Image 1 (cartoon, one colour):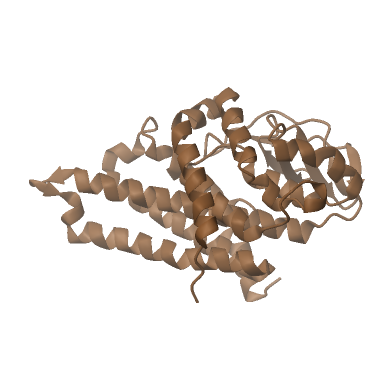
Image 2 (cartoon, rainbow, N blue to C red; image 1 turned 120 degrees about the horizontal axis):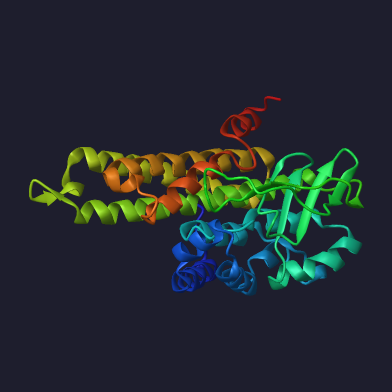
Length: 315
């Protein structure tokens, strides 16, 4: 079965691609990694204005209705451009904030891009807790609004700034929709990883077509073609799983998509690193911004082992 975006979804993806290309995201990512967020917040506002976060919000609260397929289309483009910030967590927060009182109070700021959200289980690291105005944490007592955060810790991906959220905040609901919210988080992460992998593949194909050895492009070598073909096949298999999971939102389908897309992105990152040679190890080279993100997304919102266990019905 083929899962292909329709004309409206393709136009949406093209508009996001054009907007993010014009924004020059590599410079935005490097600023974000240093804690300088002015340009990142500007891009964030444009993403919100394009309606990305509204795709996770019911119409009753000003959103476009929960549309996971369109959200997946958007997150592929966000991954292609390695946009920094708690993108997945903000979409997840939109699902968690389902009670009328907190939804009416907190969702308008998320929809407008005025506020970012992050989310994590109590005691776990949250992404960009220092940048998020809405910090959600959950425990056996329910979903709470964390009053603050701890120190910022470094991540493998410098653009992913990690903090622990402070306990003891306002209880929003004793019974949050955690399984549904986790499915949305995994779907968004899978789509984002797919976009990261596609960007790495495109950049590597372009590079091996330009780099020469023995007077010919290295992309003409059979061994190089085989590595690129393996990466392209892995991404090609992951794509229908991602969009298929967006149609069902079944936990096992989403887990399969997450495992496949993140593994494909990681495989492509390793190929890109090898085929770029020493240049691939240079932090100043833009490729590194996608390499580190592919590795970090692999374990975000579910490790490969956890996702495969869910697909197999174990645990």
